[in-house]
Image 1 (cartoon, rainbow, N blue to C red):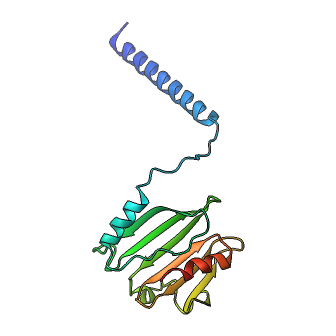
Image 2 (image 1 turned 120 degrees about the horizontal axis):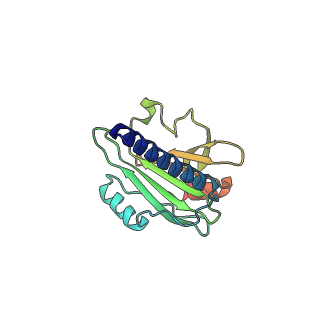
Image 3 (image 1 turned 120 degrees about the vertical axis):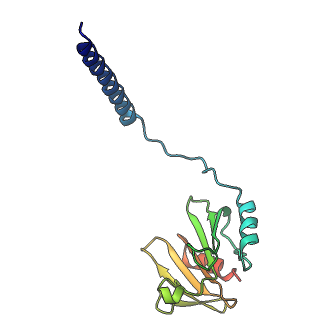
Length: 178
C-alpha cells in the first residue's frame, strides 16, 4: 500500500471512530432519564457567611426577628464597595421555606438608588403600606407569585423583603426588621 493511501485510510478510520463515539454519547445523553435534584447545593455555611458579611459591612445587617415556621437561613451573599460595584455595600439573605420556596432579604446603604432610577422604595414604586410605623412599598409581581416589600429605614438603609407568602406573613417578617 502506498503511503498516501495509508494516511487516508487512517484518517477515515479515525473519523469513523470519532463520529461513532459522538453518536453513542448523543444517544446516551438523549436517552438518560430526567432527574430532579433533591440535595442542597454546596453552599458555604450561612452562619459563617453572615459573620463574614457583617465584618465587611459598614452598617449592622438586619435579620428578621420573625420568620415563618420552619424557615432557615440558607445562603448569604454580599457586595463590598469597589471601583466596579460602586461606593455602596449590599447584602442578600436567603431563607429556605418548608414548601421549597425562598424568602429573600436585601439590604443596602446605596444612597444613589433614587438618582439611578433603581430605588425599590421610591414614592413611585408600588403601593404604600404602613407596617410597624414604617412606610413600605408593596409590589406584587404576578397574581399568586412573589410579593416585594421595600422601605427606607430610619438609619438610611434600604431593605427589600420578597417571597411567595401571604401578605400578613410577609408584613410580619418586614415588621420584625429594624
